[in-house]
Amino acid sequence: MSTPRPRVLVVDDDAAHRRMLHALLTDLDAEVDCAADGREALDRIATRMPDLVLLDMRMPGLDGLGTLAAMRGAGFAPTTIVLTAHADLDDAVTAMKLGAVDYLRKPIDIASLQSLLDGHLGRKRPANDERLPELPQNVLVESPLMKDVCRDLARVAASDAPVLLHGETGTGKDVLANLVHHWSRRSSGPFIPVNVAALPEALVESELFGVVKGAYTGAQDTRKGRFQEADGGTLFLDEIGELPLALQPKLLRILQSKLVARIGESREREVDFRLVSATHRELDAEVAAGRFRQDLYYRMAVIAIEVPPLRERREEILPLAQRFLSGAGVGHRRLSPAAQQALLSYSWPGNIRELQNTMLRAAILAAGDVILPENLPPNLRGPASAPPVDHDEGSLLELEKRAILAALERTDGNRSEAARLLGISRRKLLYRLKEYREATGAD
Image (cartoon, rainbow, N blue to C red; front, side, top):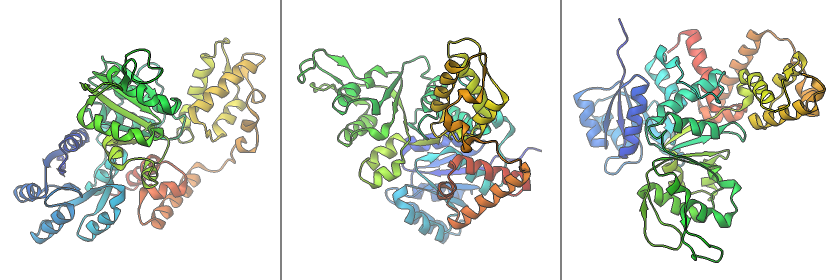
């Protein structure tokens, strides 16, 4: 007999956010109902008790804390997870005193959402969730972490919700942004990439919004901006954290209204685009420091997806290295066993970009068809890249498990802080916790 789908009630006053969560949770094999405010939520709960409630903290009228108090007063006790912005973590603590079992920070991270569903509903991911959508020929995915990332991207691609890709420089965020476009209903439209960090600050505004001839000295032609070019497709703003503070209100207004005016004219044109952004910066910290607008952050990052670094995707190092060697244009090259070991033992702080440059250098320097350790940069041949001591893999995994559990205890269960303390991505931490639950059969 099949396990019944869990019933989840989403309570959020933002209609776009409700639709996005409805689509995500449905894809995660849940039966989903939605309420636009606390009063409506109480009516839904009285009619049919959900297995889990996702409750937004900030709502007009009866807010999240008021709804929790009313649920408690009425004797309703469904498992409740509150949705909260980083600046409102004190409210999350208060909510847990009122009966909430956990909190999920906005912007929503799909891996965290999946982990909370599994943990609080005591279920495992359905088998069909293990299938990857078809990947373009130029995209290589081998590691379990990146397969999870691609499944998440496929889920969000079906909606028009803005997506923020967060990860270290060189992890391939541009490739993943293109995947979102490729899997979306906009795939036949344009994909317009813009590297904000590569634009001189004086040209960012005209590049994004367009300009009318004569609007300022040097404006010799009237031309569209990237927002108009992306009409009917996807706009990818790479390194969004570098967007000048003075232009952020203008971007926020376009995201809200989908209307854009070129510099030098008052006429506004309607544009239909899906925004995907990427950054290596911690935008929470940028908001706290006053360098990035909080309202823009939450508008452009309805969904946040963390891209793990290459050192957490070691299954992909050798296949990527061989692909870069083959594309170097100097004939066939292959890696010697010693060179392979050096690549696998290195931490790759520059991620895929560093690996690509390393392979191009090695292909040029190699005297024959075989890449030897001496063809690699000195930092790959030093102590940092020496072959690891041959410990028993089970012992290493047990040590890792102890470190993760100790970090969670030290941070009072805060998964993001525990990941930072351990120096690993939050996605890897969640993946390991999922493995531990499945190994022990724990809920």
